[in-house]
Image 1 (cartoon, rainbow, N blue to C red):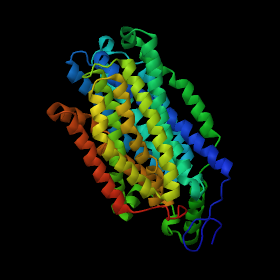
Image 2: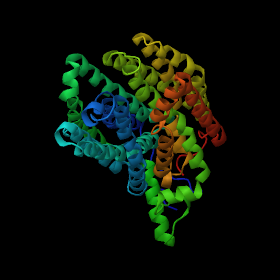
Image 3: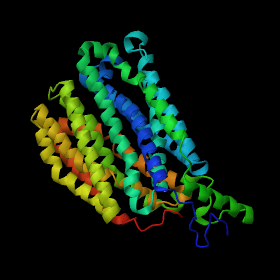
Image 4: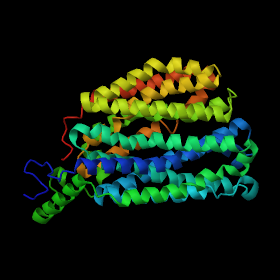
Length: 452
């Protein structure tokens, strides 16, 4: 028996200090904020600008759909990048993959800010735009799982949901930061000037943020649980020349997940469906709907998104505490129930066309979505063993995003055009019920030993 392996197959890793666990959680927050700032600055700009700059020959409706299609390209790239990063995250380490993903995201985002438009480069312009979005998607595909695992695997058991939720908070902070930048720019310059060239500045400013994120990530240690699993696997191979249970590093971790945990993976995918689809209905479709159909000014709509991001963040914090105190499933089900209760009243407020009520409706919907999102990372991490954890949670996240976020704006547009806003509400309710059923089938995870 080695120091890293117990006789019952449970890993014996070093125990990080509370200060170290907190520092890693904050580093996960900063890095995730930066990556999702880059990701969302693209989505918001695509909604507001790219139709005219990269697809000017199309009708406004078709240009909007084309802009949404470039957003969706990232969801094709995300599982590809996610599985590549997860493979090396399970084989080499969490820290290295997070540094590489941050660099890829930063470079691709800055290049978007330098792209020629259709007026300058013709058809080459949208091709390059799609290519950069593909790289963004690949980078962010590896970010979520790695950031969640670093925060989770450093955290003490009684604070695991709260500390891991810092990585989740980074998603919201990235949204808020990107929206705030767009709001300031839209208020500071005329709309025509913004659409002409000022839209590039938020992309180029990403360079400063990337440096900050890299410094933070280079200063933290590798996950102690991963290190213990790595040593256990190496010891097992040295003794027997073969793998030894769950502590050995799998040669192809995703294949191990598909072979040993297909039910868990399928149900986790469905559990993620709600937070994925509802987030993009709220912050992509409804933003476009506000500035288009409802004729709300860009500044007022972006202000509404900022208010909703604050509400979402509060929901995250409340639910993370509930997940540590009462269990992951309880927190998730509370969030799902909240979505079902508020979705139709929230959409009714939005449909009034009042900027204030748009903000109120979006915030009302965002709060329970945040409640559902907070425990999902720690929940997934506890469902999979160390040797395949990165691959397992990334596969569930990316498959859930493909089924949810990637298609949600298109489904919402089609449903609204065919039957109005309440049909969009029915779609949100349906995916929420599906996710609740999946979580019920998976059960509670708080009692599962993360060091296995």
